[in-house]
Length: 161
Image (cartoon, rainbow, N blue to C red; front, side):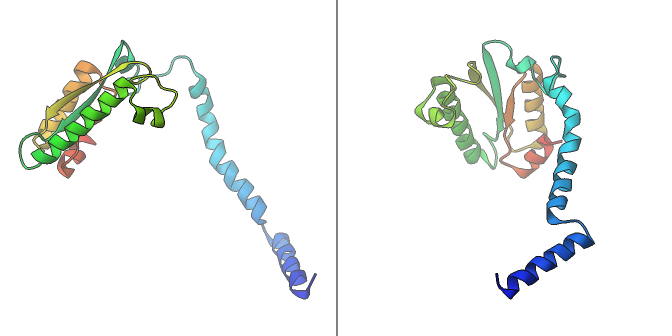
């Protein structure tokens, strides 16, 4: 060992004597992160979980619904049409267990949890109120499990309220 190694070791020992070591700081930090999460363990294993959004109602039956409020008219009609085509293709891939889906989810047979996925869509015309009304209808009538449709930032903000 050289002189430099001895100096580094003695500086480290002095720092540990003066305060908290790096190892102790890591232990304290880990504990501070983990301890608050312990209160949620009971909820994770509880049999009767509270409903979240449309769950479990949206997952009952043989079909689950996804919804898109896309602009099919107005300023963003071209982008909305492309978005809708993308969703139609994705749903087709999910329902037929397409080769691409096998790469993403190799253990899934078809659809979502073995259920057929059906796409619902409405024209938002890139208008916030129209998009919100469409999504509320999808939630209330079909208990959709997923919603999308925010080509316009105004629509995105309205849907996130």
